[in-house]
Structures are given as structure tokens and as C-alpha cells.
View 1 (spheres, rainbow, N blue to C red):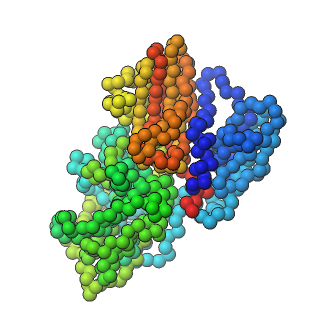
View 2: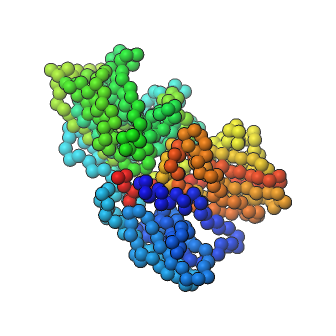
View 3: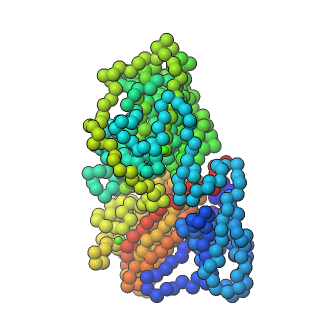
Length: 546
Ligand SMILES: [Ca+2]
Ligand SMILES: [Ca+2]
């Protein structure tokens, strides 16, 4: 991973954006082409011209270069791939300078024979035996192993978990959606989702293959739970995000076990994942979350991807409990849900009993305390949903329709107080930036190597003598300082209609968040921004962590 990032940082930070107008074409790209892997465009390939970085392929594997007067040699490069041909010498303008990529053998995941877009390629193999196993190949149904949770807990003023936020895909993935504070439908804001086993489970190994919710503001968790009273609350938790040095993030994990909720009745720990060789867990990849719980030997061992993150030997629960998986809204400690939607995905769950008994100190769960949260079969999803992780909109109110409260003025106050908002152009709505002003939106939980496409449309409303405006993406470190030089991804030009733009950015080392900035300069600037959209580029192949 490190090598991959280093290779592209220089190029990507240069924000090599291609602008195209919806009027007469302005670009003079004389050499272009596409790079494909298994018939699908391969993004992120560095294009070298005579040994110098010149471009990076976009989300569709396409690239374009400027016009050259001499013969040039084009060479693609991406860690983990070889290319056919290895390089191409061009002497004239052409749009078919194409390459075919092949994955090279690595010590990481084996080369899949499925296309890039198929998430199966990087799924984690499931155990073949166990006391309880579900790969959700049949979705999630009333006659299965799970209840669907529809219950308020966490922040009182919010809406807890909502049954309607639980869905599944046709290829066996449970989708637990959370809707943040900028979700368009106000009544659905600040809701999470959870499923829970119908049975109470005793000591054993609990494993889940999942992608936790990538946005900050909700808690993604895996936990056992048995509750009779505050003094008999037996629980084992894996929770994200953690808090390290006062900063909430996905580069740490919270492991806690409980016998009661009072002081001295539980043990809680936070582990720094970087010291364990583990990536920030919202990296878009499948991970395996597990714990082993023994009453007989008095321990809980917590794991991520088979790496031991914590061993706790105090406050070991001794009551069987139901096993929960969900994303929910706690009071404060998981951060602020400044997003529209963020999904947690679950591929499979496996539980293997240690067969410990009452002789070992295990207490059976009393039936009257097992939670019954379902209101019948109507709560279960009946049709699979289609999941496209690369299409999830990162920007809240990306089209500036309605009240765009997700956007803040430069001083972080409500945008509407500092900037003239909502310029109506026909039925469309755009932001209107006045002279020397900024509108920003911050996305937290962004770490080294995270890639995003950026696209949208904007323009200068009139050509003044001192006017300019840009769309920029800045990456910030833990101290809140800009790491990458405030890179302009698009410089607006005067036009009667919106000018579209697209490109890609990658977070450099040290990133913990990014800020999207709409910035106008000059004394007589009036700029209009029609839309700004960012999508995560999740590389499912060829980004082994090793
Ligand atoms: Ca599955
Ligand atoms: Ca718009």
C-alpha cells in the first residue's frame, strides 16, 4: 500500500484535472486512450510520457494527454499490474493509445478471475463449520436466525435504529444503512440499523466479515448483550470509531466488556490500529471482526483480520447473550453525522461455541429478558437492493437544492449568513459566491490513500476586471492544518452556461479529513456553482495491505 501511494502522490496532488465545456470544446487533447483490466476500465494508473508523470487514468480507465510535436513514448504504471504493450511510441495524434492490464502475482490476495466491479473478488472466505453460520445468501427472512431491530437507544433526541434501514443484496450482503444529519428527508435523519440473533449465545468465537460505516458520526458495532438491570448488564463490544489523542477516527478501535454499567463494573480499552499494522478500518475493504470469549478461562480476546487488538481478563461476562450487529447513534462520542447516508455491510457471520457449561460458571439467559424487538414479518425486507459503493455521494447537498445547510461560510458559520445562496437558473439551483468569499464542507475520517473522483459544474457569471473562482479539495492533518497545498481542482471561467469538470484526488500521508472549498477571489467576482459531487474510488483488486 505504501508503495502504491508514494507512486501516485506527486501526480495526484498536482490535480491533473481535465475540464470540458458544454459549449465549443476547448481542450486540445491529441493523445488519449483507455486502460482495461478484465475488460473493465482501471482507474489510478500513472501515465508516464518519456519517463515523466503526465496523467492518471480516471474512474473509467481513460486518460488524455496534451498535443506533442515529437515522437513520445507512453508507459503506464501501477503497483500490482503489468501492461500490454509495456509501452507505446506515438508520433501523431490518436485516441486509441490503449493498454491491457494484467495483475501480477503478489503475496496478498490471489488474483481473482472476476471483473473489478464484483465485490466477491475481495470477500473474506467464511469458515465452513460452526454452531451458527449465516452468509445471507437467502437475504434476511423471518424464518432465519435474526431479528430486525426497531428501537431507540443512544442519543435521546434521535431515532435509534429503524427496521427500514436494514436491507440485503441478491449476492448475500446485509446493508445496514445510517442516515445522517443532512439526509434530505428530515424525519429519517439520525437513524441507524441493526440485526440481532434470536438465540442467546454463550462463550465461543464470534466472527463477522464486514465493512463498517465509512463516515464519522455513527457507531458501527458488533456485540453480545444480556440485560436484567444496570448491575447485570453483560456485554462484549467491538465499536468504531475510537478516540485517540482526543480525535475521533477509524484508526482506532474500542473494545469493552461489561458485567454492569456502573463504575468498576466494566473494562474499556482503545487500541491504536497503526501500531498493530492495521489500516484505518473505513478503507472500503472487507475486514474480519472477531472476539473469543471464555468464562472458564476468564478472558475476552478481540481481533481484526486475525490480529489480536486486545486481551481483557477483567469484568468477563458470564451470562449468555444475543449477538448484535449494527450502526447506531451514541451521545457525542462517535462524532457528528455530517453526511446524508453511510452504509455498513455484512457478508457473513460465524459463531463457534466453546461448549462451556454452568459448571464452568456460565449462566443461561432467562427467556423473559431476551429482547423482542420485532413487530412481525412486515419488518423484514422482501426484495434485494442493488449496491454500488462507488456511486455513494460523499458530498452533502451536492446539487444545492433546497436549503444547503451542509455548506459553511469560511468562518464556519451557516453559509447563508456569509454568502448569497440559491441562485435560481430555471428550475435549477446553484450557489452564488460573491467577491472574496468561501463555502466549505468538511468530510471527516479520510486517511492516506483514500481516493475520490470530483465532478460538478460551475462558472463565473460575468467577466469582471478582477474576478476568479475555483473549486478546491484540501486534506487536513490531525491538528486541522492543510497538508496538501490547497489544490484547485477547477478554475471557473466566464460562461453563459455551466461548465462541467471532473478529476480525482488522493489523500496524502497524515490525512484525517478533507475540506471541499468553493472559493471566489477578486473584488468583482460573482461565481455560480451548480453542483459538486465526490465519489469514493474503492479499489477492490490489487491493493493488498501486505
Ligand atoms: Ca454473504
Ligand atoms: Ca444545482
